[in-house]
Length: 359
Image (cartoon, rainbow, N blue to C red; front, side, top):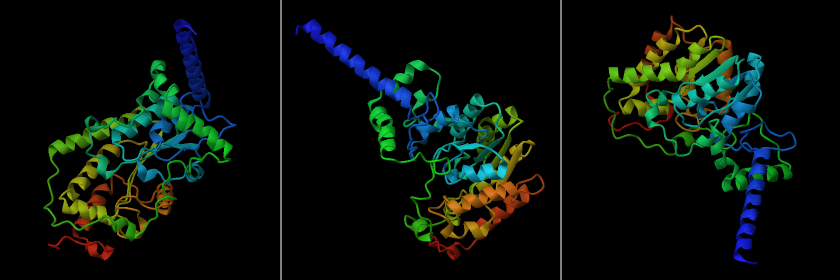
């Protein structure tokens, strides 16, 4: 074989292989970039792959409501939500992500659906001061998030996607496994037991507790900007949709560490400002469960200092449906004042938390 024929053979073979690889990925579409799941295949929907799967779910699944937020919501069940609210929902959560990142998903939801009944979203204390400029894109497959067909080469001709995901769907199906439903998708409950021992296993008492820091006007402006751009823009743009927001009930351990760092009052002042902004809108239902002290001070309800059990997740959904712990214009200030006072003066040793030496 002469050199020209050899080069042509290699090029044709390489091209054929790329067409087969790209074609298989496009047809099977493990991240639902082009279409919903094929009926004859089972997709693994692996936890930890939400950044790759959520956008395809948003674009191509059938739904009229969405559960979207951080890992605080990953144990929620769409079946429970659908029954309570007469809805057909998907769950598209992002572990540890910012107000801005969650809002980007919500914007995509409204770009793809015109009949959204409910958005159900948490507003994490530990994200309220985050800014978009701090966002880390290192593990974000941005080629899945736009409408540019040219950068789809990063999906269609990606060796790792083909081996791990395209062929992974085939192997998953051949092994007789079933695609997780939305209740199971992203849920960590089966893999992480809860209880005080797990919560305290990596905790050591701080050397001392700092004085409480001031909530500055600069911080207030950060919170105001965060809420207005990354929460309220969509609220105002879609008055036909009801937005259910809640601040998650972090454990007493988190509040003790926050108190000792001098930041406890800052978080509650941020929550109060956030409530003032949100409660102006009729299509917002705002909840906080931080003053359910029997819940937050019982570390057996948690797997770590913030993440509560699957049962608490189910309870929260029921409470929201029933209007329990709803924030209103009449009660938000007194409730947040009560929370602040409680966690500033609570004897955390009652929850089995080793205290700073000075205490």
